[in-house]
Image (cartoon, rainbow, N blue to C red; front, side, top):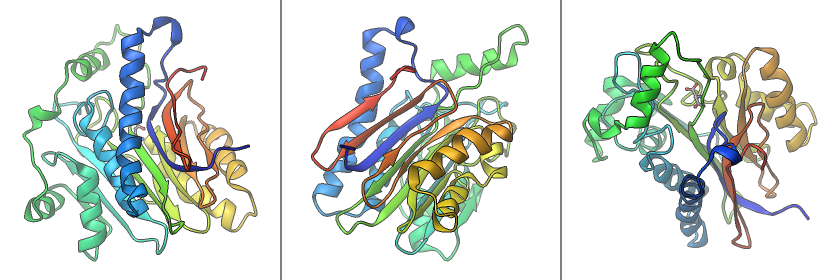
Length: 306
Ligand code: ASP
């Protein structure tokens, strides 16, 4: 029997842990991070809250956890600062909100939700997005809040020509279905390590990194953003289901495992439909993710061989 999933989260593709190199403490820290985000979202769903609130709350928990590349613990841009991106989408009516290039908002996903619910726009960048967040009382922080030694070391490694370069994607995201069987998806990221000032990836682009449509699926992506944008990854999956007659698992597999690698990019997604069918394929060695079933079981996957 396939599990009946109601909420799933991811903590990035490409950095699944290698069993032999991982201490039990680090393994536990990742599992706890994913599980606490799921528990936070579960509380919302169990008390009759919407899938939109559940994905926002789950993503906020991951943004606050410095293990993940979103909110605190975000990667650095090339000048040593941070610029954060996020988006959220509601499956009932295709309402969506996104922010790009934030520097001082603690939880970018909440700013994305504000754009969706309190403005006529879909994507706000930079100063305007910060102003909206501040006017609406969202918590703000100085850039040093996002600083972590691990990300700083990764920036230094990226700038050192003698260090072997490896792609690491640790963006976060969530998908959920609520009691009314309405879907929502959310994604939040610090972007790519050592990115150029102003670079915006797929995470805040509706149809690339995030998509939710009740009659197809909710999906949140992680991977090489430029390819997810060029391949219109998230909306292509939805279109393959809507117009191409594919089922969820086939459509997701086709985009993640065939179309995006053919464009030169790897990554993964978490995807869920309103019947609780869930899939999380990835063309990277791993995809940190976890899910919660309708019965209350939490499953986390952190190792590349899990
Ligand atoms: N997709 C993100 C970006 O390109 C990176 C990631 O998944 O970690 O900004």
